[in-house]
Image (tube, rainbow, N blue to C red; front, side):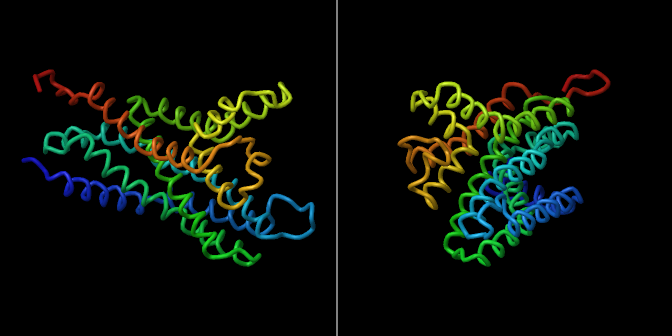
Length: 279
């Protein structure tokens, strides 16, 4: 029996979505993110001016997304392929005629929707905080669009990490390491290079480190829209525009999925029978 690709994708997406919505883990993480969003949206990261304007809250929300979206997304996706492999469902899907790319597409859609739903309370509180200090609905919708792109890229990375090993501890370690690298270490490297050379760093190296990181591309897109005249001062990016940031974000969404499909084709094989009989 060969399943139609579109039907298989929709079935896997709905199955993934239902399974995630039933998980208390999603509820707990969503609640913690909402609490953090309320705190940041209410008080912001800076009290220097004594007043909170919409720009201060906006910068705070952008930076907040850079930490909670990758962390929640990676923790949500780390078991997506590993769990299917352990339970034998991955081999069953292949036996029923579901292609690897269809399997990944269904997982990606289900996980992306699950991640966005988990972030809805957090995003709602962020929207209330932003609008209460003079922000516009249009600006917040743009921020949501950029956040959706970041969610998609993070889920793609999480699926790739989930396919990397059959050991659960290894996959969890890779997820945490990926978050540390993308959210903290790359920015630290950029700042350290600029400080050590007093800003005398080639533009291609600084821009590459910034937009080569999906979190950096998300931040660049947001700054280009909201603070176009302060991009270099806020992000250290030099002469980098929308096209490069959108292209890199698109590559981070598609690239890990294709790499995961290739890895599944090369590494994963049907689980042999326990009695040693041929498959």
